[in-house]
Image: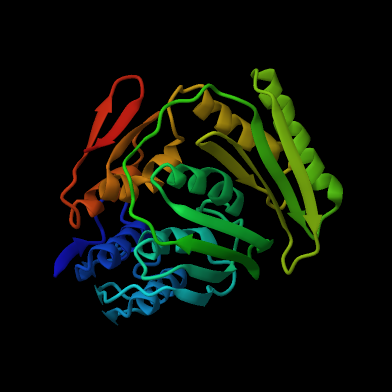
Length: 330
């Protein structure tokens, strides 16, 4: 059984998600100890429990320690089965982090998978649903992934209750060498729930203004809905780069839009292939299939993901850094 130190590196939930995901893909049982040891609330959080439980159900895994606060778990996977599944994360736990945990395994299922996921679609410390749809999944397409996401309802903190439907076709991954495309038009979606329509509009207008000042043409759609929780946000993207910002009480809508635009401009001006967050999200696929891409730097999340993947897979990921960082695996 593979042993993983859950306190390594940034010591967050990403180690757990990546480890159980690659365990399911490779069929290698894993024991993870000292989970989130240095965090204010150590051990598994409820959203980690939901992700592991969902994955265990799909691959008939034998598990232990899967409960909130647990500092040690074991995960012994079985066969990954296709079919229809429904996952209720509860409150506003991130639907995108859960799907990123499950997706590598879903690609090796014995048939197509359709999965309803209920939870938070636009919440802090996780990719937004629009980033997942418009940046992450298109990048995975370069590795041969055939997956789509249908957004039925957004879910904000604290109640969540968002709904997405993920459809995945089993495929054999292929190496992907992502090259830097000419920077084209920036697209985006600015959204709000239970707020005046002008909130989403102001977020969009401030983002477009800043992007155009920086020399990037931009087109940002707006949407406003009645939802279980109040909230707002904006996601911007161009090619394999994206950025987002969420509204919060007391923060002007213009600042929300400006923050997303500033972050995207930083990425676009780096002349790299993918943004800093996508660089770490693609690590499992790079380790599984091989390929290359560049980012403006290697984040602590990326380094931890590389370390975790190395426990399961023989293919090594090399980093080459000059002005930007190249991620490469053969």
